[in-house]
Length: 432
Ligand SMILES: Nc1ncnc2c1ncn2[C@@H]1O[C@H](COP(=O)(O)OP(=O)(O)O)[C@@H](O)[C@H]1O
Ligand SMILES: [Mg+2]
Image (cartoon, rainbow, N blue to C red; front, top):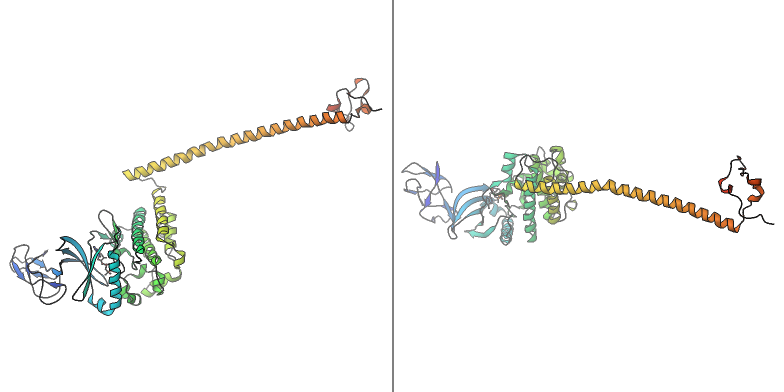
């Protein structure tokens, strides 16, 4: 069992920035233990009770408690701020990183300072960027929670709506960063933290971008998420983050990495001119809108992606709504689902009522048409009759020649059948 010791002396005398305490107190038996100078966070055995004691370290007013993350740039510690009495996270930039490219580190620290001016629920809050004996370190809000890459490997495949909601929150964080001209540059599941309350926090802003990472695969970490323009060493903007978020969504939804290959180079090349198989080829139950959005986000040409974070957010929110409206009715109904279902049912009823009214409207239209046709025919007949009457007044009928004598019916000249209009006796006398 290892336990954290209480410190007796705040500073060592070796001049190191993050150094061990000279003496610590065993938490089990309260005995004061002399600690030899060595690695921070090593353990010593208490000579009194044999307890393994984790050796704490101190940097300025911060007591470093434990390592919570390790990356290419350095280590991240959970720490306690003795001045303000709160838990913080501290990123201590690796000496090698600082030495190898001072300009990059300075630029990254500048970005961290810019980020400190930003306060957004989906972006980890940077409290300060400090330096101790030429050792730069960044003090941040301590985020309790799990990394998205851990969640993917434990729970894959993830629920579509959940992934879309995470993507929306990340995009909101990226939009806020874009507002202060910051590009993240390394969006990937390992840089997305989820608190137990489900709040999404984007970490590792800007500070992860080192130019040599592109050339040296070991600095790229997982090159699965990097945008093609980064690989091509072209200028990047917020759409590079959009690509990486697309790759993250792809991974989270399908459980597989979007770009694959035998070597890092193959993996990097895979994204240059083509896209991974459509998401629904990998997971058929996904909504087509989700597939289309990820396809756009992963386009090799940044011009073909969403132009702004707002456009992307609108699309993602639409897909989330469509997914929640999806065909399958949920088995377990909670309150929010019930509200959605109610809204859905109301909408369906409206559509049904509209559809039910349609045949009635068509019938009425048909009746109107028939009535209009009958009226037309009647009017035509009447007008023809009137015309004939008028004509008969202007041009007297010549029927006298054929008029049968002594009331005999007229014969049709062709078939000898009696013609109806001349069946009446002539009204006008023949001319002359
Ligand atoms: N503010 C924070 N709160 C809690 N954990 C953090 C915080 N910042 C970073 N971490 C953890 O440390 C890991 C490495 O930090 P990160 O900033 O990503 O450094 P690197 O550039 O070395 O990848 C993260 O994946 C995360 O697990
Ligand atoms: Mg990281």
